[in-house]
Structures are given as structure tokens and as C-alpha cells.
Length: 480
Ligand SMILES: [Zn+2]
Image 1 (cartoon, protein in one colour):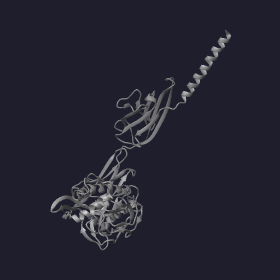
Image 2 (image 1 turned 60 degrees about the vertical axis):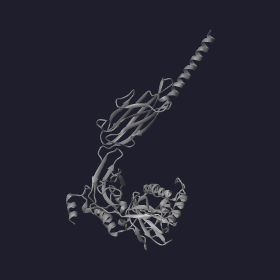
Image 3 (image 1 turned 30 degrees about the vertical axis):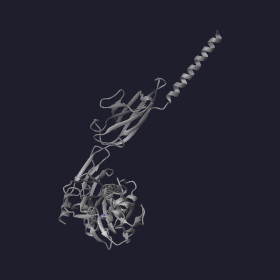
Image 4 (image 1 turned 135 degrees about the vertical axis):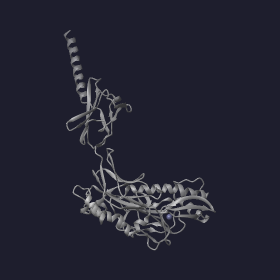
């Protein structure tokens, strides 16, 4: 009898040890995985809290979310739920919590540092114990919009041409630039544009009024922070209309039989219905391929250098005569019948065959390859979104990433792509959009539109200690 008791006691003791072990082991189990998707680092007037919590089957025993600021905790969520918050199953093993998070939805929030604190727990050991995780995420509450003020004066814009603005933006880590209608031009530190010693708040942006934009298109300097706060500043502008020429282009058979097969052979990704129908294929190249090429060109602006690489005016190719100027509105005829209309966005500079084509200013080669209607094409990046394009070359002597000086040979002239004869198709680009190169070729334009504004922005008399131009200094400047 005693023997049986002993066995029973031993079994009970063993079970207790196993249960205690399981209980302790369960206590060390990992808690749910907390992933904070939003806010990232800045919180503004109106934002979103977006958190994914992973646990088996999405089962949670606890989910407490609060925003702590200066010793005060603002509760945002607690299980089973809170008004205005959504807790939804996200796949088999996760839940997603979303709610509004910003000064509008959380009373008493102030600008400054804050901390998002999340405690999540999941059941372990059949719900006898809980495994918890605490996650915390530091962020900045930013309730004041950024501040922008324009420092430059006298902005004269030729239709289809370029301009530059100098402005001040604070805080310095926000995105800023110029908006012209629906086009955006990023700003860059003025210290990298030839204004040494300019503090980080002084910026420049190169922008354009494109040939197809209305003369009354609104232009503003903008700033936008990560919290979505925005600011705008207007600046004086004067727009000069530039009537664009209209021209008639006759497309002869010998031209079609030379250019169409070449371009199709060099552009295997471009499909036409019938490559033997030269007229139809030509119209497809002239319209669809032209658009696709424009997109490729526009993409080259993304990697522009954040500093001005050029010096002084750009140089027009020597010994070249102007055959066709910027934004020429062309109507194309085949055997007397209109087949297409396009706008020619560049200058055609007639040269003889195989003459060296040189860089119009200092820069870095951004593109050097065959590009559809442009044939062998080179794009040189001059920094801050300003680039130059050289097309129809017979050969290319540079590769992407090469630093080039003004006058350095990029390749040889030719008639590859859509070219009726040996010529250089040349254009300037601002943020990937073709602009009239005439501005950039002019020493007077460079001096007045760029260097003058940098000089004036850098003049100590223009800026008071607080950083904003005083009314007296403005009046004095206007009187000069
Ligand atoms: Zn051309």
C-alpha cells in the first residue's frame, strides 16, 4: 500500500515539475512582433497611425498604444477597441491597427519630440500566461508649416525658356523648389551654386516655362515637410511670349528607305504593324517613338548632381549654322499629303560629316547610347537639373559617368536617327524638359539671370540679422 502511495506521489511531483517548467518556459516566449508603418519620423496636423502586430492567428491579450510627450501620455488605443480606431485581421497571423494621429485628433499635442509607445501581449500556455512586447518609436511633432521667402528679384522668363530663383527655407531638411503649373523643380543649396558661405537655408531652383504651357501659368516657390505641412511664396515674374515658327517638311521616299529600317533595327523593343510600310512606320516612329524617347530623356534628370558643374555661358558648336530653332511646329507631308504634326524641341546645327561634337560646358555624361529618333545621343549633366543633349552622332567617344570639360569631344557628327543630313540636334534640358538653348548660350543672360541673383542674395546689406531682408535694404536695392 505504501509502495503505491510512493509511486502516486512521485508521479504528482514529476507532473508539478513539468508544469512549473512549462510555466517558466512559457514566460520566456517571444511576444508579438510590432511593426510601426506610420508615422515614420514626423507628425503633423493630420496624419495616420498604422501599426501591424504579428501573433499566431492574430490573437492578442493586450494592445495598448499611447503617445508620450513631456511626461504626459495621450492614450490612442486599448483592447477591445477605441472610437475612431480600426483593428482588422491582416492575413492569418497578424492584425492591423489604424487611426487618425495628429494635432487635430489628439488634444494637447505640441511641437517637439514625442514617443509612440506600444505594448502588445499574446496568450501562451493555453492562456495561462502572456508573452509581451514593448515597442517605442521616437518622432518629432511639427505643427508649424515650413517658412519660405524669396530672396531674388526680377525674374524674366522667355516662353520655352529657363529661369532661376534664390530663396530661403526653414527648417532646412524640408523638400522645396519651384512649381510652374503642374511641373515641379527641386531646389538645391545655394552654397553649391557659387554662393560660398551661404547657410543651409538659402536655396536655388532652376525652372522653365515650357513651350506648351500657358503664358499665365502660375509660378511659386513651395516647401513641404514630411508631416504634410506646406508653405508657398510668390515672386515677381515677367513672361515674354516667343512666337514659334511653323514649317513644312516633305518626306521623300529615299529618306524613308534610309531612316526607317535603321531606326527599327536599332530599336528592337519598338514594334510596328508592318515594317515594310515605310510611311506608316515613319509616322509611328515620329509620334510614338518620339514620346517614348522623351520619357527616357526626362528620366536622366533624376540623377542630376546637387551642385553646379558648369562655368560661364554654354557654347554653341563652332562653325555650325542654325537650320532649325526651338519649338518649330512642323507639319509633315508625303507626296503632298499631310501625314503628321510634331514640335521640334531643339536646335538643328548644320555641320559637315564627322566633325568633332564638343561638350557645351563642364559636366558629367549622363547618357551615351542609341536613342530612337535621336540616333546616337549624348546627354551631359551640368548639375541642379540642367543638362545638354547632342543627337544624330555617327560615333560616341564618351561613356556614362565621364567628367567632361567645355570643348571636350563627345563624338562625331552624323545623321543617325531621324536626320535628313549631317547635323547636330542640340537642346538644353531643365529637370528633363527641353528648353530653348539660346538663353544658356548668352553671357548676358547667364550674368543677369543667375550670377546677379547669387551676388544680390550674398550681399550682406540685403540680409538683416534675423535673416529676412529688411524693408530699408529692399528699398535701397530697388533704387540701385
Ligand atoms: Zn533636330
